[in-house]
Image 1 (cartoon, helix red, strand yellow):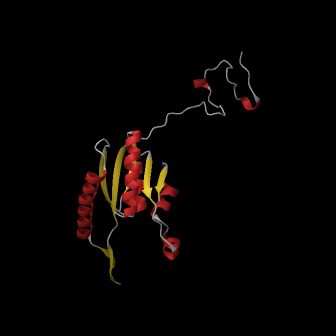
Image 2: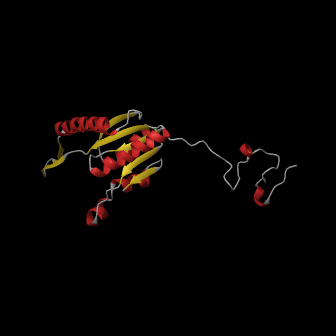
Image 3: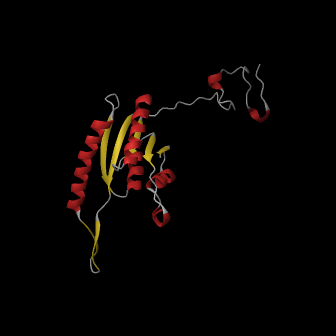
Length: 176
């Protein structure tokens, strides 16, 4: 009692129940979809705080864990021509510690008690660290603020959000 249509797609009621219809053009092939971990990069700008507000509400609805990420960009200072550029590790450590405290304060004041969260501090280029953490933590969604650069700066460097969108291995939700 089965009948095939053009292209080999089975008709409804053709002897297979709806959970077995894999190629239905009407979407009867329902795949399991869940968001368990959401990565939210924070740079403490108003834009990223606004994105965090969206993330909190979204995580509350889907019951996902929020992973807050603050990236300390390496402090590189020109020395002289014989040594090239020099990094100052102690300065980076201080920035990371300040970032950790600020992230804890932000989490305490912005998150609902019902939303599970944790914070990660990294040092590096923001878009690279965002993508790496997303992969390492197996996140299901990156929720990031878009506060793009303009003019020559955008042409030369591109925005962090734009780079994350192009290179991330998971969906990216951008908040304006």
